Length: 186
Image (cartoon, rainbow, N blue to C red):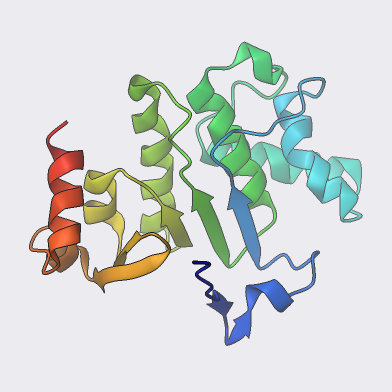
């Protein structure tokens, strides 16, 4: 059966917000970068589309790339970067839009295990700086250490929700316990 829901931001459904609404940014599972553009221009591109002048867009893009630890890679092409670095370019692009919220859809799932940590470190730094994030993840250690609230879903239905200390460390629901046992024992 189709399960439906709604995500609201400031009391308004995100589905009803204008497409150009900059209050939210999204970082996908697969890093989506334009291969023919430099890292700097990949981050500046949406800013230019919003009407910012090239110099202003590139200055902001450079600042965001420094924020995610890529200040030395501005002129490289995406193919010259590791998967973790490419995902950090995507995070810098999301940050450049000055969102109130960033949605992360399994931002580390396409990465080799050794690259996952560098992306999670950037996300943890964003959380410490007060960025509101909605993160879909299987990285339970990250969720436990960074989240204010954890929601465990199965089949599109909320099974359990609450603070990480409860949901991850002492889950009430059997389905949550089975999932965590499976994930944490691998």
